[in-house]
Image 1 (spheres, rainbow, N blue to C red):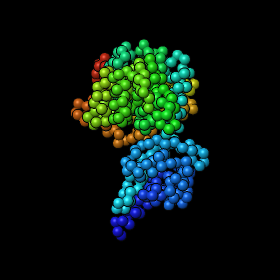
Image 2: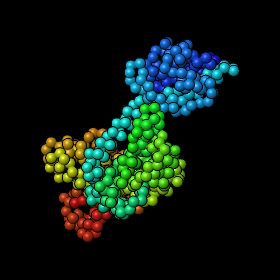
Image 3: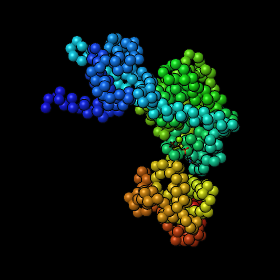
Image 4: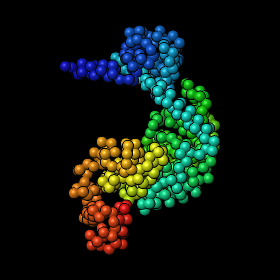
Length: 468
Ligand SMILES: Nc1ncnc2c1ncn2[C@@H]1O[C@H](COP(=O)(O)OP(=O)(O)OP(=O)(O)O)[C@@H](O)[C@H]1O
Ligand SMILES: [Mg+2]
């Protein structure tokens, strides 16, 4: 098999199966390649187009308005041009096109157009802005959706209390805050609490996830757009303008591309936004809160976060510990969520069985507090009679993870810390748990069995977060 043959069959397969539209014209402007994805976007049949000149296929186009013909003439590429048109079925199609000059045979030039259909993303973006505007206008008091404050945040662990303390101080100032923590640790809760504890609490709190949208759309959403800046663009304020006077939460800031990071930095430094395609500098007064679910320093070192932006955002840093770093809070949170879902689901659940409680303490909670909350909510839903959450009420896949035998060694939690000190602590904890159970949760009886003072046992129970 010749190399040419192999290339051809690979390219044929790509052309046929990709959802990127491809249109190649020869030096006379006639189609020599036109794939199915392009035909679907333009609502045409491949054979209607092949071999024909672009002006015959699209009578409304001219030598000047057709990007393919323009590139054929100028031999200069045009990248990421936004185009919008009605296809034959009358549906509005939005595409992002790049048109590139290519050599077809020695001395003969053609042009290649690559089109990406972004209709769905555009529709989603429009919906998002609409919903956010609705939310901002309906919320008369401009309070946040859930109205969380630091009082609703549960936790007594030392590191966690430190994070709350920093958060409370942050609420007093107008500086930017970078909140980091694994997924489900409560970053959004903190952001809302900072806003609701600040003097901006009566103004809007708007959250935007930076990972959910392609960069070009995110830019328009954050900074707004001006009619005519690109085909189909309308006059629309961005979230910066909508959040004016209030707070804007940029969730998962680590997903933002470098170019947009640079634009964001400019806005933060200058206090003005310029809508995409606009000329006017619009003054804004917005408190920026940003979150990352990775260690910000690590992202800085990896080059994901721009240094200049990092230092601008990182005026106040709140680092929320993961749940496995604050296991002593598990019983507290368990109680809190049981109460919460008793209320919501109109149930009367008292506590979790000691087997479940113990498994909670051994598990490493990759989904953090959110995962704990979900387990409790789902278990409470499953209980038909009785007042105790037992292992049978936990969904089978979760139960498997929670009670996974290789997750524990001799009844001990298999934490990453394998130091002797830590192993001894784990042994001590597991013996206390076992003896407490045998003693019917009676502290005097248990301390007697263990041969230690009552106060010593009480101290250890507290240290290991064992609730009686
Ligand atoms: N300390 C806490 N006290 C009470 N509830 C909490 C606490 N932490 C988290 N939660 C609960 O967990 C849910 C998830 O929290 P949140 O949405 O703030 O997490 P996140 O860190 O933003 O996660 P992600 O990175 O996945 O977006 C909250 O809706 C809340 O119900
Ligand atoms: Mg979040």
